[in-house]
Length: 179
Image (cartoon, rainbow, N blue to C red; front, top):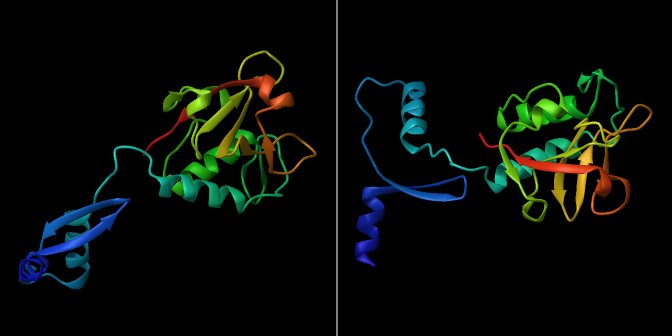
């Protein structure tokens, strides 16, 4: 137990993005104001995950769920004016992860890494070709065979099953976008 107290005196425990990092405790250099000290602490304890974390997916889904029921608007890219499918994904990824996605579903389908349908995880983008003429629709996989998306004019942002029926037939690919 004594060794543990010594370790705790010499190290600070930082839990960041599902990783535990032990960093030596350093005295603050003289002359630093509290803002500069806060920046120094953030720089020395920041851990940037190499992959999207479960927290990123949770943020994406929670932000998306907050827009359930919002009206679809063709060409829309803000909640105040309405959102189309790609505007919805742009808005959610920018707000949740600080990632700027391209404007159209077809362009988005080139971003990130390809994911097999059997390996999709919540937060993955899912792409569809409803009319068979190339990718023209995007949603976000939320787990259990479902996606959240802005479907079409006259409809609202909704959760839909993608494992059967129309969306299962129109499915093209999935992509995982990281920081």
